[in-house]
View (cartoon, rainbow, N blue to C red):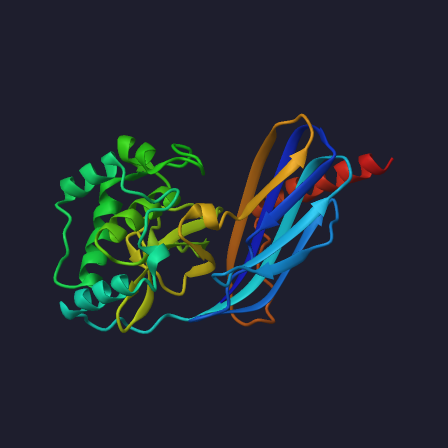
Length: 316
């Protein structure tokens, strides 16, 4: 399957700022059952883009906008080929022994330790007790059980938390979004001795799948390391094992390692962030994605037209 992805980001400042320095993780990965065919990124105002690959293989773009501006728009576009991963083989109880040996070796130390957003708070321990969480017959069965329990225990409620919310916010209200559910599952899996990491990316939505997550936003899920299998994705927001519809962008210990955008600016101003995402299925790499729905045209026009108008005004 081929997916065309458009990711629009807009930072609107309350007053002109004199400089913006930005770091962006929006380029999909090219590994496993996923292959990146093309990627391009543009900014308004225009900036020279640089990139590097971090220690986990994520591509990071960075740039500097030195002139005065009240608006910064980032347009990222990608074409990705994704295949369904092979069926998962059954595991037995010996897989727990293999995970314990892996933990003892220190090879996956970072993915077993608490991190900034995925940690064992008192509320998380109480939730684990409520679930009567323990190691099941094998790690795969346990992770599938945990994915389903988180899915049923929490309401998907956009706006109920924000990107810097601790896990306790969602645990206290039993409401949250994909980022919260991923952090909760990562922390619980690590408590069981399963190396687990955060994945940022996109999910292709179809009406027949009845996904809870929003179609016009980025998505987050987790990957757990299974002995003899490798890293396997689990989506507690939608109660799924990750497949070809899950398009991976970046991996890290938690959200703090892989935000889609992060930066600083010079000036006495507050900033407001708007994001729009569209993932379209295309038959071949040469096919043009059908982004012609009235709703998407209106969204894209609002991002680009406002940015260009602001740039013209700054040049006068």
